[in-house]
Image (tube, rainbow over all chains, first blue to last red; front, side, top):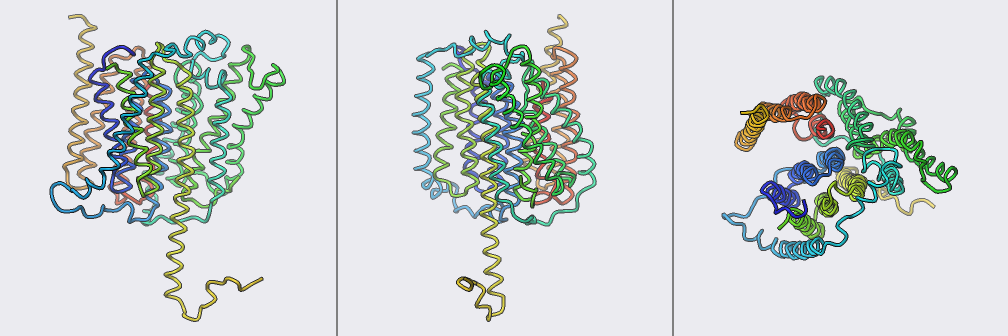
Length: 323
Length: 116
Length: 115
């Protein structure tokens, strides 16, 4: 792909991404910005697929658009009504010169910054420093990896230290979020009674989503998928159940705490196990690397799903029995 | 211009737009969106550089996956903090409204320095 | 005309027709005056558009498994959009419990089921 001249699809996709990002960043009311952000996420998922990164596209659709979108929408609908209501009156006239003049310094700065960065990036590509990257090295070691999909092998075997720290970051985020829990806040608009349709839909769909999550998890061994995307689908199922009133409540605190901890704890056990057996932190013997990775991914997916759900619930719910 | 170079320019545009907006916007929510967009721009650079080989380089893809998860983590924390700030403001506004409507003899409503 | 070429043309026609339906739905979203009329346009046009796109892709799918997964995407998107439309038209919209948080369900399964 590196030397082909850019095609129409790529030009349109790139322009669409920049345009929607501009709309998301300059919208006058919050809900418009958030909706544009959701559209941006979908376009980015298409973009990742176009660049040959289906794992990233899955993660962007599930985590970047799904969970982040749910968080943003929930934050906006719980926010003060005046921030998301009708925008302020525009100045009269066909072209709002006041608005344009106010936006000029920012726009100029954005153009300069973008041009500078673009020249720097394009120069790096044209200079062609090490175009091979690490592909050769990774593919050369795949038989010792335990899984057949290169990205999963990198995530959970070759660079598992990064993944361990990433899981810890998520864990710390959950801790900082639950440290700020207060009493339950009602929404600004009185909620309608829980529609029977929604409850039925959630009852029917939640098992399907759990099945999809399990499939994405197990597919990560030899094709795009993996623990993070699976965890995000699981979080989606739990958030959906929460909107129907069927989700985790205050008396599920102990269960949630256990589910949150089991992922990072299992990862630490595997890491220490590597230290004991192989003499190296996080080392995996190729003989049982496959089984260990699958088991670890399962527990990780559970923890990630619960962690994302707890962050969502903490936005407005009351006590979720903080860990 | 090759495909990869075009996408690098797209990423630069995203980064420039989002960083400026991050510094100039007033609403914290818009700033959070700006951080997300800037993050997407930098991840686009990584994925584009990974696409130079065929099959694409898996290491930057793994880095990008990690980046997406960390982005959602700190966006969640940011949004919860935003909600707490707004809730505190609402409570303060409700308190002053309550005090204004309450009995005038309630001098001790502030309550500071009353106890040891 | 070989069967392969015929299949490709048919699949292209279906996908373009699906895109046309999506465009019609979007025009309805932008131009119609009321929430309910907009939902009407969106659910009907977008479901049919998605169905046509999926059918066009099924013709080009490499295996039965991939074709089934594409159809699962369609079959999951349809009830999701129907339920969301129902909740929104029930007097929900902004601020109701159900309408806002429908996000995580569909993109996750849409992304996962598309393999």
